[in-house]
Image (cartoon, rainbow, N blue to C red; front, side, top):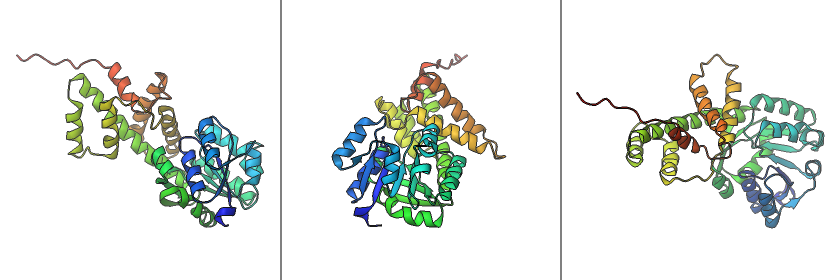
Length: 303
């Protein structure tokens, strides 16, 4: 397929999807989008040269390649399995690239359904921030058949800074869930530690310096500590989305015999944040929630 003649439909032009679409336009692809809840982002992409299609069905019928970047399993099922969706309306030979964080079992189901209609489905979840997506530097974990990957790679390389092939269908989504479980569990203990430090009047800058100079150093510390110290409430990773990922991980690993107490404790912390009404806040809001509910540790007076 020639780049300038390839029509790419992007479904889910939100915080991450807008960056994908923008880089495809910059790479010379024809891009079409549909209206969704991210209206401002869709309007922005149309100004950059994307075509606005009136429905998902028409987008599917017109596209040589379809990229989905969706926020929930419910959205996945609607976009893929409804009568108006991808499986029933994409043309034979279409390459479908799913950049959502999804359930590997659902991915296999969709892959089988797509294969029956000669549609190539590749799972390609994203690693990184929305700024990285906008800059074309996002990481992508890619799973699929040999034929599907061969067709999808030129597209994926256009919007990705690093591509990590993971194996067959659903392996991309499996690796992404494992990655997010580790990332968010690291975050959870940092929120807890900074909250405990707050009850004792320990200087957060000192704590961050100590952790950064020891085995506690991590990318999450580097990201979280400055954000907490600055009182930065901007949303890089919404708590609701993060909790969805942890819930998907819990469901997936329940099929294994591996004890999962650590990830369950992390999920408990994040679900407490949802109960506190923080779904649309950044995950770092959990530190504030823990601080608000904490009591100073009572110290024994010296004898």
